[in-house]
Image (cartoon, rainbow, N blue to C red; front, top):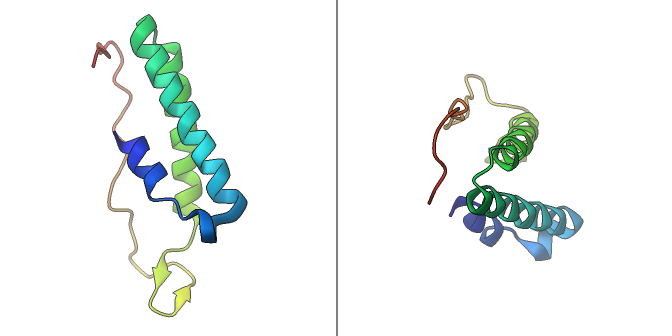
Length: 94
């Protein structure tokens, strides 16, 4: 699952409080996805989508890493992945 990979990629030694908070957020998101699956409810999915979109906005605002360290966005920089549109009416059984 992607959330587990995100958690596993956190560097708690260098990430400090931010790393710990992201770890907790990813735990919460996984719990909400599990609840959505078990209860067959859309509300937890909507909440997870909203939180992930907020996180994506934050990552997009963060400058990309350059060879000289963190700096201003590079000309022509575009994120590699775009989020998929919401999938209304889809069955979320795993």
